[in-house]
Length: 209
Image (cartoon, rainbow, N blue to C red; front, side, top):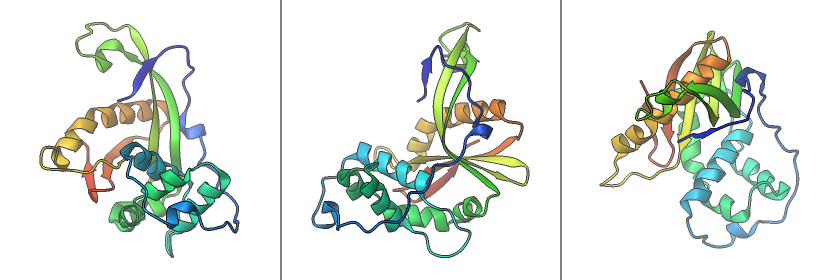
C-alpha cells in the first residue's frame, strides 16, 4: 500500500518521461546464466518492474527481453541475483495479450512515475473520521494514453496458491490501485477509464472496478 508522507510537492505524471534505454554493449556471460539462483520474491518483483520500465516497446516484431536484462546487469542497475529471478516468459506472455499489444501500440506511455497528492485522512484510513489532508505518495508502474483516455497498469509477481488464489490477491491490491487511479486522474486532464492488475507469474490480467 502507498505510504502517507508529508513535505513533498505534488508531481504531475504528464510531465514525466519513460526511462532512457541503455546503449548496446558486449558483456561477458553473467553468473546467473551459469547456475541456479535461489528465488527471492522481493528481488523477482523489483527485477520485473525494472525490466518493464526499461524495455523498448514496439508494436510489432520481437521483444528484446534478454538483451534489456543483460544491459541492465552490465550497467550495474540490476544485480545478477535479481536478473536470475526475472520471469521473462511471463513478461513476454503479458506483452502478447490484447492489453499488452494495446500498451505496445499506445501513443504515449509513462513508466515508474512517482506522484504526491493531498487526500483527506478518511479517504486513506476510514477509521480516521477527519478531512485533514494527508500527502499520499506512490509510484504508478505504468499508464498509457489511448484515444484521449488514460489506462492504468499495476504489475505484481505474487504467485497464487490454494489459500491465496488470484481472486484473493486481486482483492488485496484493489484498494491501492483505486487510490492510484484517483491520484492519476487528479494530476493530468485525461480520464482514467481502465485499471488493471497484471499478475505476471499467474498469467492473469484482472480488471479493477
